Image 1 (cartoon, rainbow, N blue to C red):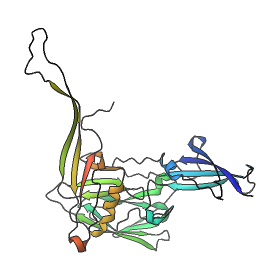
Image 2 (cartoon, helix red, strand yellow):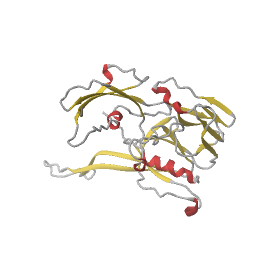
Image 3 (cartoon, rainbow, N blue to C red):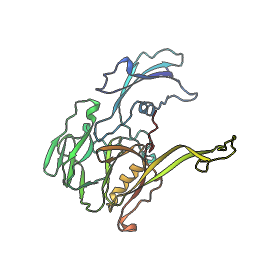
Image 4 (cartoon, one colour):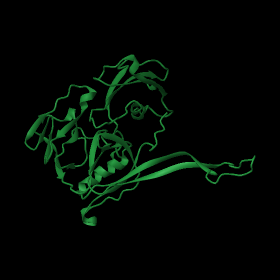
Length: 328
């Protein structure tokens, strides 16, 4: 009995796995076997991502969804299979990505949800580090141990550990509480001259990660407008007033840009900068507000201690909104 076609129902929802309703059905896909092939391949990642929007207001909450695929099989005569039909597949979805070199459906980290083993925090300021709750048993920050629990809900899958101010080391252990999975060094920076800024972005694991820029920052503005010319002659006189504009502006608006510098960092921060450049969403904390950013810098030179001696990065950003509020 050869496979002829399938029907896939895709449910996307939050909560615990399998706890979906009819309203969570997002797509129904029918597909036939291609001639001379015996398998059917479907891509559900992008379909699931349509219903996973990560938002951030300095609140650090888990934002994942369950994707449940129910697949029904028919043979070449369109007769339903009688064995293992339908089948149910459950996936926990993150807004992350893999690299080409990792092949199809790469499994990303199942413990620490940051790539680098070094993070920089502002001195006397607490920070956050994301972990995957399913794969972590405990975390030791300096000498303080935190046990990790997971109740199966999507709002527990990504947990953001608070790193107390001026901590130095974070050790992440497997669910057996004895296997050390990752050690993260925390470097606390005192910056007496410049105003440090915290930029948060979605990293390759689909988690919020913070990156501090400690050194010089500059802001600029780019204005856009349109113009038209009008006739200012007074036909009855005929004269015109020299204080009336012949060329007039309209649709005036502007974009604000900010250029930030990290200060000197370790070579291990290359991957952090890379993921910032590849992120579709970023935010900056300015005073009591979290404002959206777009990375304007489109190229990155990977710096090394051998080639560059001291390593720092300058990144250009654009605030992701118009200067003049034209939301209608």
